Length: 434
Image 1: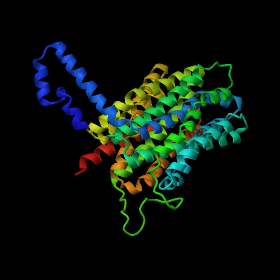
Image 2 (image 1 turned 90 degrees about the horizontal axis):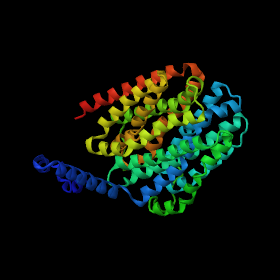
Image 3 (image 1 turned 45 degrees about the vertical axis):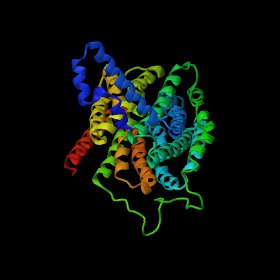
Image 4 (image 1 turned 90 degrees about the vertical axis):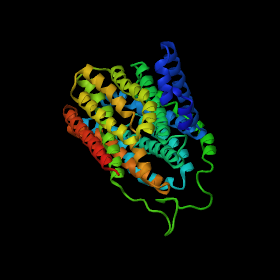
């Protein structure tokens, strides 16, 4: 597909460049525009398939709650008279549930992908109802746990479908299109909860914001039809590490690049969750004097930059290589963590913008994982990878809550150093790669 796009874009070839240099200024502009339009047409036409479109629609609908929750966290803490460690536990329970469920889900998805995509949105909806019931601290934690399990089923299921069948013309672009849809949902959730009247209680505001989750449930029949041939017929074990069985089944060696991909996913997750679910909401509310709308605006800055960079970054990774782009992402996120953790309000806003650019590479470690993993082991290793990611999402706000809001900036500095170190290790590894 890429060769077709190159043939249709003379400005990208050697002869095309020489002819452009001899052309006038209007001709230069027209040729550049034409080449870009044709290149984007082939990219979009090859990328969008019915399965990917339905997966993207489902993750879009289910991530409204993810975007809305950080903005209502200060009100939840005040309304429940929660201590900092309780706030951290409520925020981190979502990631803890995903972390605990990822390995069973990965084993389950090996043969039961279609069942998982049905159960996930339903469990998530139940979790939202429990959380917004406005109960005591244990009820709030239970609601977040259920939301985490439901989100894990949907997310790991979608990623497994993409990694297993390589939906579209390019893996990195398909993964980033999936993440793009998730970020659009998160952004819409943040904007919607920030636009609701401040007189509306936090639980009612969250319930209204999560209403689009019904769209994901309504599209399940179409998604099941798209996945009708994904699981082989006949009896299959409930949990399995690989699709093939027996002594002749291919193995899955553990390589240094694979280990670094897991480390990178965990480092990105723990830094991101500390900033999004603790530092920005609580530091913004207590130190920077921001209300719900102000906290939501900072989160929107992060998400807008994330969304703007997602698809271009996926195309760049396909053309230039996943690892060089991932190294740049890790270094950018390290700088952004320091800005958000230690800066004044304008510096924090700049850090949020950089964080968004870095988070556009959230899916890049999966490209390394797929390169190092046989197809039969994709579901199992995807679930194992998500343990690192969701473990980081849990540990970020949980550890920040244990330290207290006044010391959370120390953790952001630690995570910034971890991101930079991981990026450098990746760079050294790839330079030694034969």
